[in-house]
Amino acid sequence: MEQKKILFVCLGNICRSPSAEAIMKKMVLDKGLQNDFCIDSAGILGIHEGQLPDSRMRAHGKRRNYDLNSRSRAVVYQDFFDFDLIIGMDDNNIEALEQKAPDLESKKKIRRMSEYCSKHSCDHIPDPYYGGAQGFELVLDLLEDACQGLLESTKI
Ligand code: 4NP
Image 1 (tube, protein in one colour):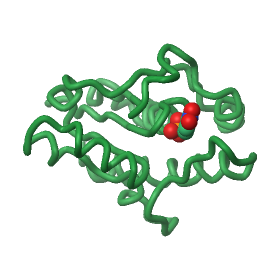
Image 2 (cartoon, rainbow, N blue to C red; image 1 turned 90 degrees about the vertical axis):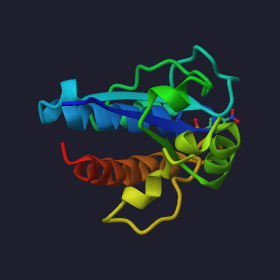
Image 3 (spheres, rainbow, N blue to C red; image 1 turned 135 degrees about the vertical axis):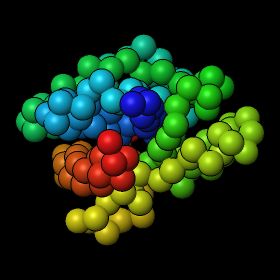
């Protein structure tokens, strides 16, 4: 079976998208489907290039048994060819991805993370960077919901 290649994207690639990556990787591993998926994350900005996720995000993730160990990187041109789904967290991410997409085929790969939520009604995953602990917990709640929906939608 063809591997499903999924790229999660947020602004800095140190809070939301590395969390989505860790949650999705754990869900897939728990189901023994790790060979059917290639999962990565990236940021619209490259200002945190090479850094581990934000320490607050890592701490909140750890409490739910997620290991946030990816290194920040920016979205690159090749991503639009390498991945099947490129999933942004909010309007700004989606707009920036649409501007970066090199052709119509790659534009069709762009999705919104909140569209996969079923338990929570939300239209974006809010940026927790300038807020408090509740914001990080909300990000994890929404991403867990969305990753569940995403896994179901891939029908592997
Ligand atoms: P993220 O959060 O997009 O979820 O990784 C942010 C991280 C860093 C910044 C903004 C948002 N920043 O401005 O540095």
